[in-house]
Structure formats: C-alpha cells, structure tokens
Image 1 (cartoon, helix red, strand yellow):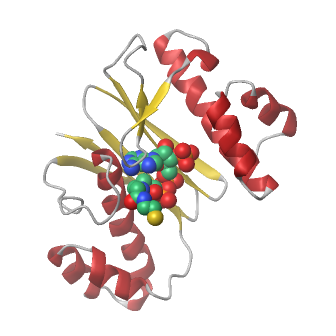
Image 2: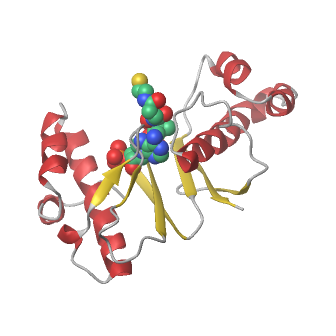
Amino acid sequence: MLEVRHDIVRAMGAFLSEAERRRAEWLKSERDRRRFIACRGQLRQVLASRLGIAPSDVELEYGQLGKPHLSHRMPSRNLRFSVSRSEDVAVIALSTGQEVGVDIEAIRPVPEADEIAALCFSASDYESYAALGPDDRLAGFFRRWTRLEAISKGLGCGLGHPGSSDDKDWGVRSFIPKTGYLGCVVVRK
Ligand SMILES: CC(C)(COP(=O)(O)OP(=O)(O)OC[C@H]1O[C@@H](n2cnc3c(N)ncnc32)[C@H](O)[C@@H]1OP(=O)(O)O)[C@@H](O)C(=O)NCCC(=O)NCCS
C-alpha cells in the first residue's frame, strides 16, 4: 500500500539513492512524490532482505527502455523483479532465475477501450474480447491489458514491441491485488 504515514515515508526516503531522490523531487504533486518514495523504499527493503544487505546498499541499473534490475555488483544476479503501481497500490513480483513481469491497474471506465483493444490486442485476444457482453467488457479489457503489459515488462520493452503480446513463452496468472483492481504476473517458462 502506498498511502503510508509520513514518518514511514521519511524513513523510506533514507533508503533511496541520490538519483531516486532527484526523481522524487521532480514529481509535481506531493502525493506522487510520497507514493514513488513508498514504492521504491519498499522495493529496496524487499530486495535487501533477499540479498542480506541494507536497503540503501541495493544497487539498481536500468535497461535501454527503463527496466530496473539488480547491478552485477549485487550478491545475487539471479534475483529478478518487476514492479507495478496503480493509484495507491503497488505490487512487487520476485523470481529466481526466470524473467518476471507484473502489471496492476485500478479498474476505471476507459471510453476508448475498444479502440485500444483493436490496436494492441492479438487477433485471438481481440476476438474473445469483442465477444464479451457489456457487463463483462471492462474487466475483460483490463484482464487482457494487464497480461499484455506484464509480458512487455517481463521483456523489458515498451508496449508496441512486436513480441509483446505473445504469451506462449510465459506462465501467466491473473490476480486481484485489492478490490477494484486487476493484476497479472508472468514468468518466462
Ligand atoms: C514499462 C511501462 C509498460 C510501465 O507501465 P505503467 O503501467 O505506466 O507503469 P507501472 O506502474 O505498471 O510500471 C512502472 C514500473 O515499471 C518498471 N519499468 C519501467 N520501465 C520498464 C521497462 N521498460 N520494462 C519493465 N519494467 C519497467 C519500473 O519499476 C517502474 O516503477 P517506477 O516508476 O517506480 O520506477 C511503460 O512505461 C513503457 O512502456 N515503458 C517503455 C519505454 C517506453 O516505451 N517509453 C515511451 C514513453 S513515451
């Protein structure tokens, strides 16, 4: 949960690197700053407990399109992670060895859902989405969308990567992180 007490946010802030603190400072709203710090601080705590080091000693590096990963100087190069945030909730997925991707979304009206589905979903996903009745459409959209995003985050590429909708290489599990949200976690087979 990203809405945590101010003293906890302050304590989390102490775990962050200089670059992360600068990133927090650039965020315009106080709420976004707080949520970013709470998320990054908890990510550092979770990784640190797995690595047996202090949260502030966790070193992160970034792929070409911004995917964070542990630096090669960290004691376990096998530990993979993926993070997703939506409103006041964040999820951290961890995996040993295999690449992992996670996405969560607060379910909210998406007036342009049909257009997005036509543009981004695979042919079979779009076909099954289009066959849904009006009551199932929104959840059906977010179920497919979170899977698509989780796979593109596992790959470390943005949406729009040619392979990003291909789920045959991934173990896929949808979940509900909190009432009103949908999530999907994928692990490379
Ligand atoms: C990665 C991406 C799918 C994130 O989607 P999102 O729904 O906005 O955000 P989420 O909360 O689910 O994920 C954010 C987290 O994903 C991670 N992340 C960032 N870039 C990533 C990437 N390329 N691959 C995997 N994970 C990534 C970070 O941990 C980030 O957390 P942080 O903001 O606290 O640092 C999206 O930003 C993207 O497509 N990026 C690729 C780069 C790109 O195409 N940029 C164009 C910008 S115009």
